[in-house]
Length: 63
Figure 1: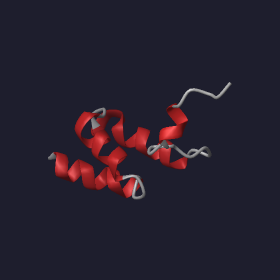
Figure 2: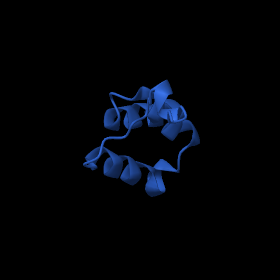
Figure 3: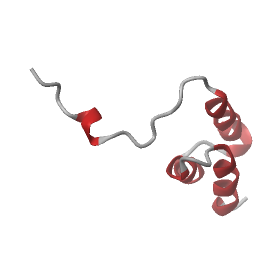
Figure 4: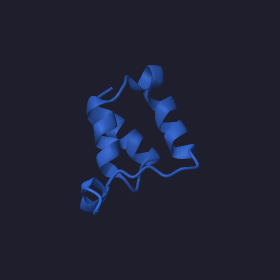
């Protein structure tokens, strides 16, 4: 299966976060073994994934 197909499949799971779908397709686990199960589990999680954190989330806390 080509990575474009994998990207499209992951994009179905993560339609609002295409960067995560791309990363899962290119750098993620094998979709046939655990990749799609992992994507399904992440999609169904109660806590949303912050894929695009703001720059302030990495800033040092003010004293």
